[in-house]
Image (cartoon, rainbow, N blue to C red; front, top):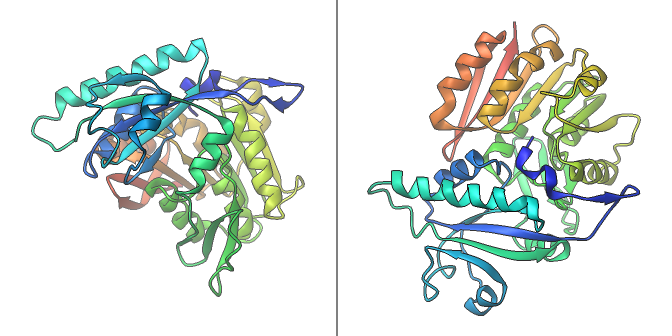
Length: 339
């Protein structure tokens, strides 16, 4: 559910076109990563990647950069970690990039004495293949919870004993399990999913939560996302894990505004999950309650810690009880129970 990325994909005859992207990189410190993520989220860029260290050569930046802000070309981009977001290199994205710049400038003005680093914003042009291949160097197998082993499809290492392997190709939709929000969601799903369950994944991205649910024993899963790229990537990831169309559906649209989509998915599920952002979780909560069987868990994540109490109040008003809270790296995930 990332409205700012609606313009990010074009398709012809159902085939995704190869295209150029704008990579928005914000350089900060380890302590500043969460603040930058929150700032970009406020600009509508909810799905980001985080690089704990950055080693690009200055020659690459000089060649590819189309915009520099608050940047010292002698120092920026060498040692600072950064947060990256992507939008299509099309005219409609100019407003999104401008919003991101303003959000980072607001963060700079509010940071006071906090060590946020340079907060330099660098925008570079990349194409699909650059994006996919650059991503691979940061993606490694992860053991999550007690049962899951999340591995990129290009790595063939066997899973540790008694773990279920979930193979993924993130493609151009994010969701790999490496970020705090996704990891905590998977840990909670592992506790909740029972054999025979029907699961709903609101904001599926790469499909990691819904595919994992089927591998953990769910009978079926319905995955929903606003980004058309998610359909292609999530279905491929499902097939890669032996999850076929009889057990897995991906639907594209915004359940907050698309009445036809609501009707298509509106029934009661055993487990519902939404790894998005606080504002969307608050807006989704009443609809999610209608999708939950009495006593069913609604797992939510993507909540920055400053908004924890706001989200709790909203979901309680929508008919949920907060039964479990996980916190990691400034992010919060909750297990809610439908009353």
